[in-house]
Length: 332
Length: 269
Image (cartoon, rainbow over all chains, first blue to last red; front, side, top):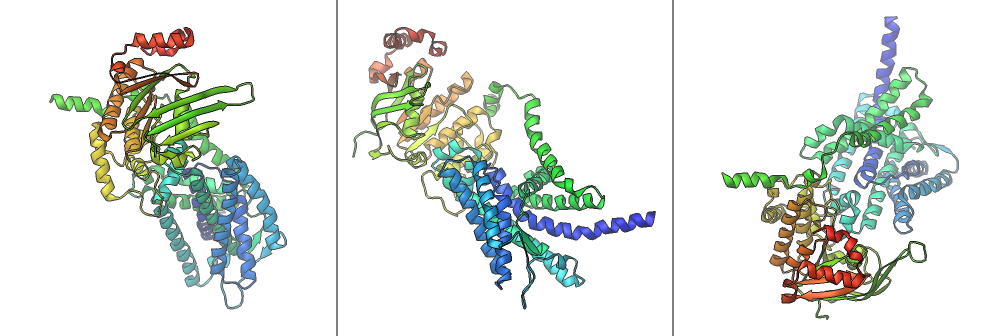
C-alpha cells in the first residue's frame, strides 16, 4: 500500500516540472491580463482569440521553415493587432468594452481557422532548427537541455516583467494607469484616454500572442480551441498571486515589479493545482468550472467586504487629519 | 487676439433632445471674463451653472455658440485638448485625483498637462523637490507623504491637492465647480482659503460655482447669477462688496417669481 502511494506521489512529482513550464508560459498571458484587468480596468476577452492567433501564426511560420525566433516576434505583433481591433471597436465606434472584445474574439476564431487551414496543426522542429519550447525539453534526459529551457524561460520572463515595470513608470504608462483609475480626472489632465486604452490593449494582446506562440510549441500543436477559457486562467493567476503575495508586494520598494512576479507565480500554482487534480483522479473535465468558481469567489471577496464592513462616517473622513496635530504642535 | 480671457458667445445646449426628458440647459449664454477676474456663480438648481463649466471644459460639444479661451477658439476641441488651457476642481473630492496613484504621481500628471507624453520616466527627482515645496504651502502636512496613495487621504486633503494640480501650470482659466459642497464646514472654509490663496498668488482667472451666497459675496471680484441657462445678474467691484444675502434673494425672487424660496440655496445659509 505504502509503496503504491509512494509511486503515485512520484508521478505527481514527475508532473511538476511540466506544470512549472506551463505556468511560466501562461504567466506571460497573466501579465497581459493584469495590464488590462487591473491597470486599465477593462475586461478584455480578446485573449481567448488572440492567444490562439499567436499560436496559429507561429506554428504556420515554423512549418514554413521560418526561424522560431522570428515566428514569436510575428506572433507578438499580430497579437498587438488583435488588441488594436478591440480598442478601436470600443473607442471609435462606442461599443462597450467587453462586447467589443467578444466581437474580436469570435472573428478571430474564423481567422485562426483560415490561418491554419484546419482546426489543428502540429509543429515539429524543422531540419537544423529547434523549437523554443517543448514538452520534450522538460522530460529530456539531457540535464543541460532541461536546465537551458527553464533558465531561458525564467530569464525571458524577468526581462518581460522588467520592461513592463519600466513602461508603466514612464509618462505614457502613468497616463494609462490614470485612465484606468479615473477617466474624468485623466481627461481633465489632458490625457487622451482613448489612445491610452488602445495602446494598452495592443500591448496586452501582444503578450497573449507571444504566450500562445510558445505554448503551441510546448504542446507540439496549435489548436483553434486552445484559447477557450484563457481569460479565466489568466484571472485565476492574477488573483492567486494577489491573494498570496499581495501584502508582501505592497511593502516592497518596487511593489509593481514584485506584483508582476507574483502573478507569474500565481500562474505556476494554478498549473500545479491542475496537475494535483489530475493526480487525485478528480474529473479533470471539471477543472474549468473549478477555476471559474475560484475566480468568482476571489472577485466577490473585496465587494462583500466593502458591503458588510461598516464604512466610517463621511464627515469624519473628510476632515484633514494633520490639522489638529499642527494646532497642537503650535500650542507647544 | 481677443482682449478677454474667456468669451462665451450665445451658447446653447439641450439635453435629450426630442425625448420626454428634453431639457434646455444653456440658452443664449453670453459671458466675457477679463484676465484676473475671479467670478463667483450662483443660481438655483438647474440654472446651468455646472453645465456652463462643463461646456467650457468640453465634456460634451455645445449645440450652438462659440467658446474662446485666451484668444483660442476651443469650441470644436475635445475635452483632453482643452485641458491645456484649464484647471478644474470638481464637487466630488474623488473626481479630481487618481486614488490608486501616489501624491507625486498625481502632481506629475498635472505638471505634464497638455504636453506630449513620452517614454521618459514619469516623476523625476527635481520634480519631487518642487512638489514638496508646493505641498508645504498648503500647510496640511502633505509634503512628507509624497509617495502615499491619494486614496488614503481625506476629502479635504484630496480637494487641496486637486487645487494644486489645477493651478500647476498657471492655466488661462480655473474652473471650480462647487468644490467645497461635499466637505464639512470647517474643511470647506480651509479649502476656500487655499483657493483664494492660489488664485491670488498665480493671478489666475477663475470661475467658482457655489451654493453658498455668503461665499459668493465674500470671494472674488465679480458675481454672476444664472437662471434658465443664461446670466441674469452681473455685478462687480464696490457694488458687489456692498451686497447682502438679502439683496441676492430678492433678485432671485424677481427672476423666478418666488420659486427660489423653496430652493436648497436658502438652506445653504
